[in-house]
Length: 638
Image 1 (cartoon, rainbow, N blue to C red):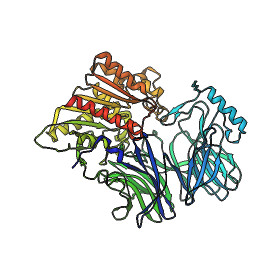
Image 2 (cartoon, rainbow, N blue to C red; image 1 turned 120 degrees about the vertical axis):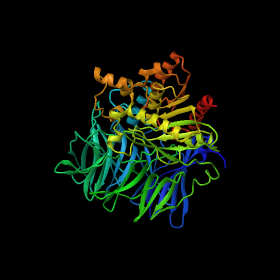
Image 3 (spheres, rainbow, N blue to C red; image 1 turned 135 degrees about the vertical axis):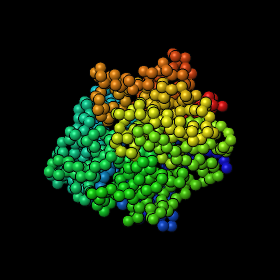
Image 4 (cartoon, rainbow, N blue to C red; image 1 turned 135 degrees about the horizontal axis):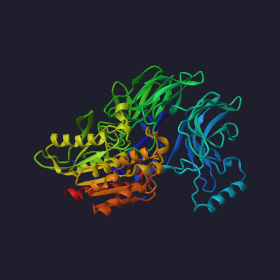
């Protein structure tokens, strides 16, 4: 049996965008292209009964939607103007129209109109109806000012989107008769979610100038009256999604913080009344580096709402009928995407330590595709062994044994910490972990306090950040050493990304038990990070923002760099220059402090990459990142 190699990932196929068209499945698979240092996507039409799988399109990136049981493809083909070409697939691509906007999504509305979400710019909000002369003038002004960055709004950038100062996600009616556009939202409104219902469009939106509000309100547009009105002025609930459930407008959100568990609310008598309360987030937070592309998070079918969420160490699909939640999938692994053909449920899933495949959900899970069978054939895939410890609550996790494991030998160990903090680890395939196991390491990973899937008390990071979670991780390491005497206690390593990077920084400034650390896309100074991270707007800090002495002290006390005098562990930093979630200076600060202190350290920065480097960065960059970490660990353990 062969080990997993660094470049084995170049053969992985990432499945996403599962949908239904004329009783067949539509999906994309994405494959890394090492020569182009990019990705290739293929759009498939799959008959699940006879497993006939036809590739319809192949391109660098395929943006497609299913609208009224037809496949539409969106392309940005015009380099000179802001324009989106819309194609319909009928035995090939057939152009429907060119729209003078940057389309984000098209929704089916009624017999006369589509509803279009598109990016507009405050410096030219009516670009879509400008003359060519006016557009040329606008683009000349953009070119003349490309060397200057002017900020007058907050938030002004976002990870993966770059600088968004002045941008809005606007709403338009698109005529089915002549493809004409009509803007229906004010210049200042930013749409966050959309639901259509006959002649009405419901918008979860934030209307602001200069400073975006924390709470989004709900608006209704009626095509019959051509009127847009606010039907719920919000000031207390952090909404994430709106849906139509049994003819009633239903929202998902929380009255606590936007990262607390979400509940269901319905609009009744001009107020949002809670109809069902949960302590869980409604999305898949089970972490892996083997996904690419986007999946469906929720879907309304036959009056019921189907939605993904994380329970314990697995992601499941739930059905909500307005009164209760019911599991539709429940296995050790991850449900990544889903759709229906009639009453038949199909999912993209990671189960049985396999990479993504499509399954039909029956009494069991019938595998429909085998796109990733060959790449892992005859290779060593370490099976996760469950392990737990206790610290206030039970802390659950997993252990991977090294390739060629011999119970009479000693092996180095890597503790891997997930991001979030409301991420979660489960028994699913991770390339980096499998590589390290194949390289002869024990790999251990767990879900400390702050993780998703265990309810609000467990995941309350306000109470646990940099305290209980640290104790959890250290106790998990202690338990691993007790349970597996083959682990060499003198060759322990630690790594993690995002929140895991923060915890890596916290660990090296609070203990000397690790011989090497790799801190990825991390935070070292929480006071500074609050003001230049894109997530500060999106998170409510119950203890305020760091602008008075008490709040500054709270944030500083939980900043790893405060404790840098304790650090002795050789530490590698991995940070991307366009990471606006955990910005580049966060690594530079602690790297510089360690240098001044004389601790062995190295910083590898990735130009042009963002917070998603390990998951969707360019293939050669992902290989370099993983080789940097692996070589750093080997340098200090071999």
